[in-house]
Length: 324
Image 1 (cartoon, one colour):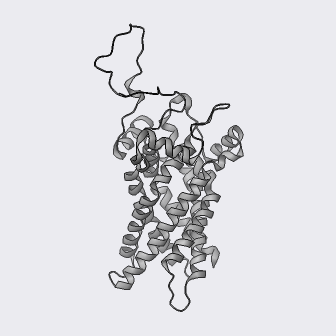
Image 2 (image 1 turned 180 degrees about the vertical axis):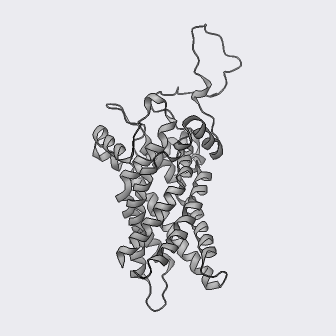
Image 3 (image 1 turned 45 degrees about the vertical axis):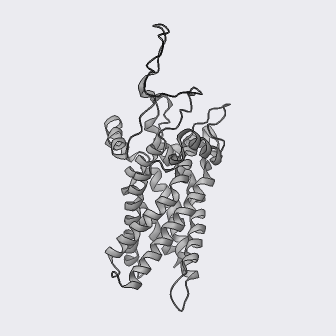
């Protein structure tokens, strides 16, 4: 009985992750916008990024000014999507999809199966209901465990998605998620597979608690109030609302997680970020507090459809496996 929850959650998560992967890739690219180049340090004071000051003196013809394209203007999700297609091809929208599938297999199957097991254990046998607080605790526990299991695939996915934005000479060019995990282990040590794991666990706890708990709570409320019958309409409504809640709650930690996982650590050099807190402080200091909500539009654009596909598929898979 318990294993069935893991299978149902795994199948639904893989379908949802694969179909919404391009939106997740765009989200990652947006979250890395404005991040300082880890190889070429910026001057301590740089008031104008795009234009040469009007009163600048000509210091000689041999002085080379940095090309204006070094500092890429921040653009929206549609522009980023078009830019990826134009410069890297349509297939680039699915960069890292193998890592996404592995991540969903490890992370989401674990979190959803464990959540289902805890829900069955903690549901009141007489009323058939479970308090919201218990749902949140179940989400926190299952999300944390799932994230710890799936962190290597998460690191590989972030790097593969972000690779196209790097200069050609700096790209990692992983062939697949297996190649990514192999190269990371050889070049950076086995511990690199769990880089940012504290952030991944924290994010997963927040996402799972807000996503699964709110879906169950909203669905139960809709059915109890008689607003809708138990069907696709109810599932879509509850899941989209759950996706919005999860996106709002998780976006700041998701931005920090993406940057920590993507940073390039050169041998003998100090890493760009000493940890999650250092990354958060540097991000806020250089880009402002709203930088923690970078990529929010694609996050909600992805989280909404992902959550809808996830729960609608989950409900259908449950029906198919009901007799097993």
